[in-house]
Length: 304
Image 1 (cartoon, rainbow, N blue to C red):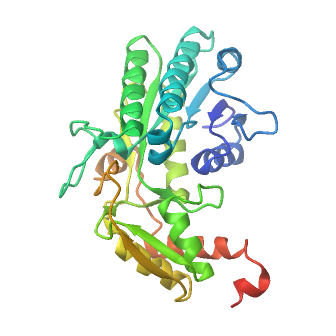
Image 2 (cartoon, rainbow, N blue to C red):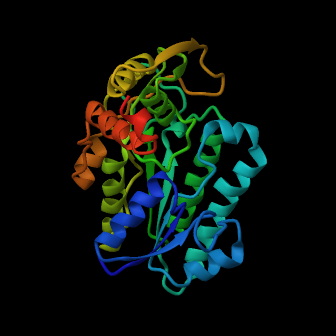
């Protein structure tokens, strides 16, 4: 795909920045939409959204209240951003003369608890927290927009990590940040286990979906980007400490009541439909991430 003009919401976030940069490198133009942009863009601003949708040929909708804990603290904001703004983006795309295709970024949280299962995309969705329910509701809106004639796709992310522009208190940046500074890693449930995916794998996956829509594909089912490997928080903490040259220690705390405690996904659909598979191992990803974290430290601390 090249020479597309793509609106990327959440363009300064972890996934959004990587996707936008990849689009630019492959000969596309990007309309950046983020509260942190040089010209701030609020996806809840309906007039701005309608204007943007009338100009672009594609939309990658990544902007959201993107953390489970923030959704629990601010449920009304989560509904406004994750559901209402998504509805208006889809309506604006349908109204646009250009009829831009839309990729909607969802989350493994829509699956809810699936203990002991290798989860595929067709399993019944059963979200247990406010964030997951908002993503499920937005997915339904995307499905309705497809029925109305819009070219759409749903992608689901799982514990993406690997860049500095991330929320510092998410598990991976919190663990690696503490490890490289000799700090304390807090494990909210050491046996909780998740499927971690590196941003260098996820961004090309999103671009591959965009290429399918650009080529006219109208029947893509939901696709999640997963490694197929489960890693417990205790194992992750030990690996993070090793990547931090043995510095740091961890403390145990009980799991949070609103969190899913276990997830590992089946990567088969992404492989079959996109030729995509995770290539960055957890070991390599942690090493890269630790090196990135060190670039933000004072020289004497980074070399200690």
